[in-house]
Length: 311
Ligand code: ACO
Image (tube, rainbow, N blue to C red; front, side, top):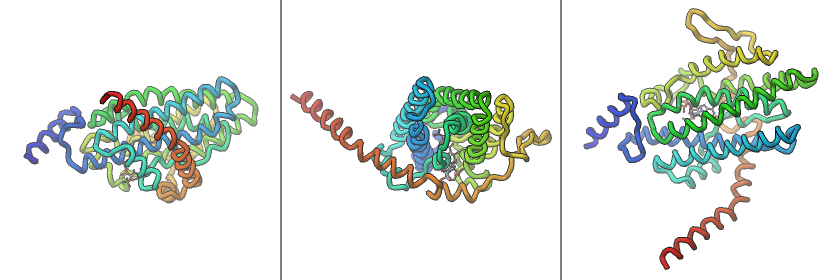
């Protein structure tokens, strides 16, 4: 029977069709998806912090309203993704516990500080831009609930990217000091945003199997070079530069070549040693503690409703 189930699973994958929660799946498939989808959810939730910190300092009412909406979207993305992860059989409480105790990873990028208003632009343009480049192919991920969650998330992410670009565009057309602030933000976020795509292919332990299962459709390096090609063009519109003298399009391979990235720094950040790791985790734990009364009230209410249904 196990063999038959495996054959059915393989046929669905070969067909480019979708695995749904009640279908049989190999335990390793379930495990790697739970890992990736929950890490993705945690990233959305932790990723609210650098921008939420700027809501009170946004330079106008309009910018404030936009930023609030964006941070709220990220909370929503986290919720769809936790729901998708739960369909694989691990409860939300357990996933949350893995984050709060530091057992689960979340994206490296959110462990860097957002120092200036221009960073809100660089985060939107580069960080959300990298997120889209990585996530558009995930809309076709073989696991149904994940792929479907990605569709809506990508639509919202493209708004986020445009608002970031527009912040930088306004600054780049502003005073000398504003232009300098925009360039400085790009300089600081360029490398970390390229690292969001994960380690180089030869050091990516999960890629091969995840691509065979059609969870990932492209390799880390492949998506990274595509993204660099996109921003290499867009930065010209800003009249600013990318901090990468080696950046060029290689005719022969048809790929963009960028400078070597600091992978030691990446490893240190994903192990918890980034400039903001401790701060982000402390903030998340505090928010969870402070939200205890909401969870208790919701549980008490649900209990009461259930009682009155019985009566
Ligand atoms: N930040 C933190 N951890 C990372 C990162 C990163 N940028 N890139 C890779 N890792 C981790 C992997 O989770 C894996 O850890 P584990 O095996 O200990 O669990 C390890 O480094 C090795 O990497 P890979 O073998 O390449 O892992 P994988 O095949 O999962 O690829 C990738 C990594 C590309 C990030 C993939 O998981 C993915 O596409 N995830 C969905 C997108 C996502 O999570 N985006 C979050 C940021 S975007 C946003 O929230 C706005």
